[in-house]
Every structure is written in C-alpha cells, then in structure tokens.
Image 1 (cartoon, rainbow, N blue to C red):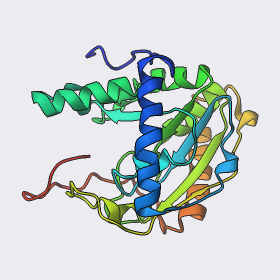
Image 2 (cartoon, helix red, strand yellow; image 1 turned 60 degrees about the vertical axis):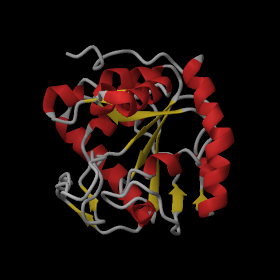
Image 3 (spheres, rainbow, N blue to C red; image 1 turned 90 degrees about the horizontal axis):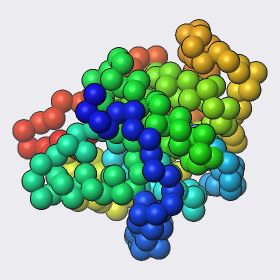
Image 4 (tube, helix red, strand yellow; image 1 turned 180 degrees about the vertical axis):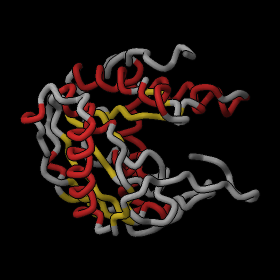
Length: 246
C-alpha cells in the first residue's frame, strides 16, 4: 500500500471546498459560455444526502462537464499516477487532485483497485456526492461497455441512490491524445435516481452485484443512446504522437 489507497477523504470542508467552489465560480461559467452544452434532468440529483452519479466515459472532458450538473461538491476517483507524478507539472497535478479531495485508484485491477472502494464508501457515508464511471476507462470505440461491479457494491453497502448520466459529444472536445480542448456540441442527460434497498446486505453477492450493475448500465445507455456491448472496455494503446492522459 502506498498510503493513498484506503486513505479517508478529508470531506468537502476546508481547502477542497474552497478550491472546488472557486472553480465553480470561474471555470463553470466559462465552459457554459464556450460550449453551451445541453444539460437535462439536473433536478434528479438530490440537493442533500449521499448520492452516486454513474456516467458513461468517452473523454477526459467528462469530468469537467459532469461538474455542470450540480452545485454540490463532487468527489470521484482519480488514477493513482496523478498522485505520484514528479516534476513541477506532475506535483501541481498531484496537489490539485488532493486539494479537490479525489480518491486515488490503482487501475491494475483486483485487490489494488478494490481498495479505492473504502474511501469512496466513506464519501457517501459522509452524506456527499460521489461520481463513478462504471466502464472503468474511456470507451475506445464510442460504444457503451460492460460495467464493473464497484458501482453496485457502493450502492448496496451505503444505501445511496444511483443517478445515471449519459453524455454525448465529449469525445470530440478532448479526443484521445489531445491536450487542447475543441469546440463541439455536448449533451448531458441526467436520469431518475435508481434505488436498490431491496438488496440491502447483499453487497458481497456476485450475482446480485452483476444484476444491479447491468441495470445501471442499461439506464445510462438509455440516456446516452450508445450501442451496448457486453465486454469490458480496454484502455486504448497510446500512439507515439499522443499524450498519455488516461
């Protein structure tokens, strides 16, 4: 363990709250003015209490447009490499994700990836908003891929409702390898909350976890309009002329 996995988030007060609010007051208006995204269904996100935002994943830009759906502080998972980079730029990125109170996740899979569920669960037990991309990585082909069961485990362990979100167009804003965002039509559709209280205490039942995850992915697909494929998304190989950012 690096000391990042399993660490408890500090909560939406203090530095993380101040920085997040500062970004909401500056970056969010700029994004709305530049891209004029269509955002529907934000009334489905509760104004208080724990909630999981489950979204499809097309681009690094998804994180930024997700922030336009609610004024509440959103915690999400960030790959552990962001916390460990060296150099001035790397340390700045690490300081930023820490200040925003994000949860480090080791994407090598298995037990290391599962360790991120502990602090993610604590975010929800603190009555906050946690966002997750169930596919685990960006879709390499624009299709909606099979979801990983971590989202279901969090929902059943905490009782938090899951709000499905479907995005389109973000892959044109920041395509694979791009570092400069481009103007494109972006649509964000927020669905009605899904609640799974009937499965309380079954967060370790693999069949239940798969069924709940599939229900969440179906709801996301209805909102994004993507074709669903029952295979896990694989991280797209980075070309020599591309910048590795996922």
